[in-house]
Amino acid sequence: MSIWIWLIVVGLAIVMELFTTELFGVWIALGGLVALILTAFSLEWYIPVSAFLIVSVVLILTARKITLKLINKTPSKSDGEDTKE
Image (cartoon, rainbow, N blue to C red; front, side, top):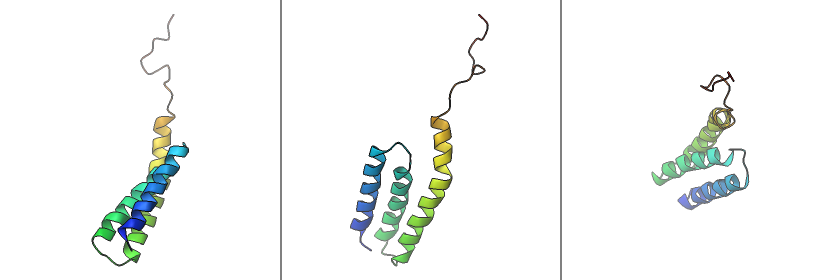
């Protein structure tokens, strides 16, 4: 596969992320980046494709949930705020 294909995949995923707030495209872009690096080593086509699918799915299922929890974390009264008035 051509490096250009993976550059397009990464670019489209970044553009998709810019138009959404779901933190979905960033993980696809990272999977595409891994595939792009593997393609640069002239490996068989199925190796970068498999790596893209595996990395993207694992990141979507794990890192996305963690990141959304960190972003949506609201400070509680026990975070050092004085509750006595």
